[in-house]
Amino acid sequence: MGKTEHLTDSMFYIMAALTKPRHGYAIMSLIEETTNGAMTIGPASMYTIIKKLLKQEWIYLHDGSDSRRKTYLLTEKGREVLAEDMELRKRMLRLAETGLKEVRE
Image (tube, rainbow, N blue to C red; front, top):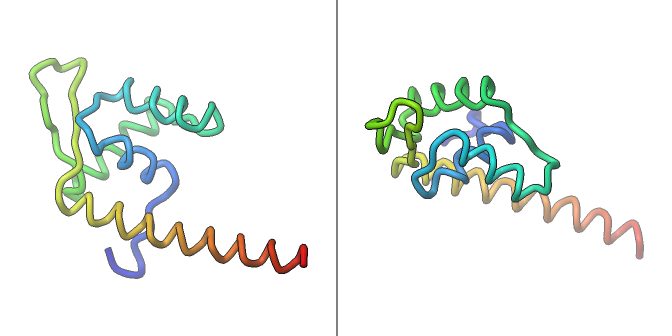
């Protein structure tokens, strides 16, 4: 992924949803359910991000036989990018957790 490429939260959520083949509505529903409504991605944003992820070759069209319900899935490259970003986010959380703990002590 390199040091300059960071996933936006929306990209991260969409890629995380695409560890299994899903279509747009299923992606949006999963994200909303998983975050208890704290994170919602509208159709326009989602399809803009999907186009970007396709162009980056981080996802691919898994099944386009039904034009209204195209399913997408992470590529191997996409899995690597998601895993690297996950590690970065874990480090961010550890930093914040450590800092908050020190404040309480």
